[in-house]
Image (tube, rainbow, N blue to C red; front, side, top):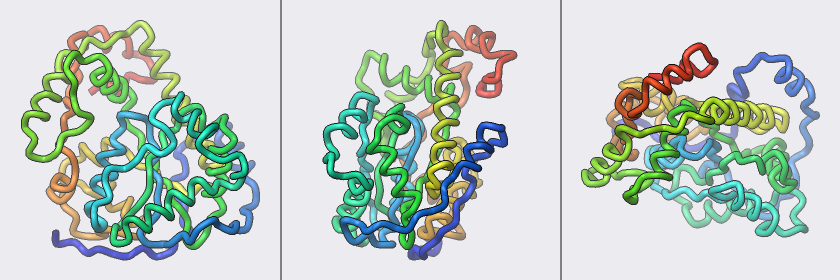
Length: 312
């Protein structure tokens, strides 16, 4: 690669907390407490490898995102671990059973990052995936972890918060949960068999519509609640779009936006070819009239609703 690699510099910026000017969100922002002093940590947290957390719904590209961020910022540390659980039940079990009751300061989070930094000292970034299930709002240990993120300084642990078109999230979930043949979650470059299998599974899907609007509304509400919670807890967060990362053609500005925020990786001269070489092969069908066998039914259902713009 021809771009420049930068080492992390301590940063206290908080970029694009939430692009929502609703009264509810204004109230949430106004309710933020005065930042507390950084606590005494259970381990020696370093500024490099850059500590970070990926936060997004399942089937929203977080594994692919980490793959690219990791490769382009240093030595690869992939696969990234879904540390807090891959489902609501597993997440609840994690927060209730895996974290000691004596841990009341969010030490579980810092210990994982410290361990990753020790295991991958030459990496560009280290971190984990935190899927924001309902547990992020209800579990005490989850809230303690977020509170810690909000007061850590020099270094701080930044959250990269990614959102994807919610209709595509639902389609991807349906493809991977109901397909008759076992398909991999992602395909490596050069794995033609995997790519063909993925494209075949993602074509002509009959998407159930009885609860589609309710499901979209639920996911949309959950995403907004997560953003508001991060803002309220003063968690340093950058918000990015799956579509701008993976479907923007030659425009790599969303990637450099993340690298600049984290203070590591390429800041200039990053090309779409660099991103493509570093990541997984794209296997999502870009047109709903191809991916959905009942496209007309889905389109008629969404027309005139707040989710009409999700169609493509």
